[in-house]
Length: 384
Image (cartoon, rainbow, N blue to C red):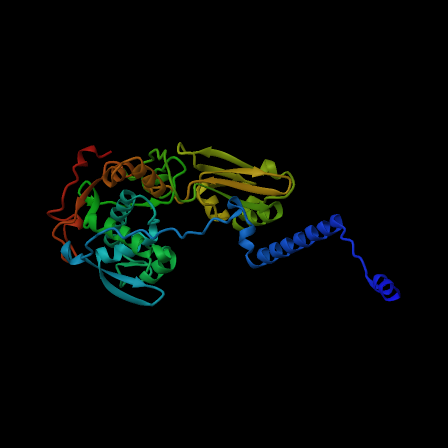
């Protein structure tokens, strides 16, 4: 009896509390799922982004294929020019069209419409030959022309083209080559002679009569409307503090006797040309031309207005350059509207005609010098 009672006392009974057990199990499962989520989020951060938050891939702009063009200068004509390179201090004999490749590249953006670039090629070729016939290069008398924009025309070497165009070099170089080769030998004539084919960046809406910028009234350099201009710098602004402006004026024009007091009454636009460019500007006790004002104040154009604030004098300009001859931005706008290069040229060079160079095999007297056999312009009867 006693042993049986002792065994019963030593026997333990365990009771399972099901609600508590189920709660602990649910908590454990939640902790495990949370840990798995954290691990995945750390390992794959991109998976946490929704589709709308995923950054768009950066895709490089495709490089345009070059325009097919046969660049063989010997197939057109063998006119050569002696070109002075100031940076190298040497003169090189080059075929005219070869030289023009660098000029057109330097003078007009290759991104302009092809017909505008063709117009530039003809203008640059004409300007080159006119310059040679009228004194040649002033920087080096032994040269016909040079690569300095301050003397002749801007010139881009092949290295400069690579630096400027980068990955688009092949395409833009082919645009220049196409423009030069398609117009090879073509020049602008007036009354049978090569014209002074001046050009500029942008006109501000109207080009200028030659005598309003230079000395002579030239019949083919008349003011014409240039309504649709694309490219170049259309507007500009030059700002001076009032003391700096007064100092600039008195330094350049001692007779102005300008003072800071009553400055508003000392600055007045007296007259404008029909194109909208300033003809006469009063500065203190002096009167200057708009052309002179452009030089003194470093303005883009002589088409400007003057604004005075409490502390500053501000010039607001339209157009870029002297405004005579062909507007490059205007040529680009005309090309965008469907005009070909001949239409562009005859618009800006009133009464001039484009003709192909004839019988030129080198430098010296020939048809382009106005001698016997010089081709007559078919616009000669319109001489004004």
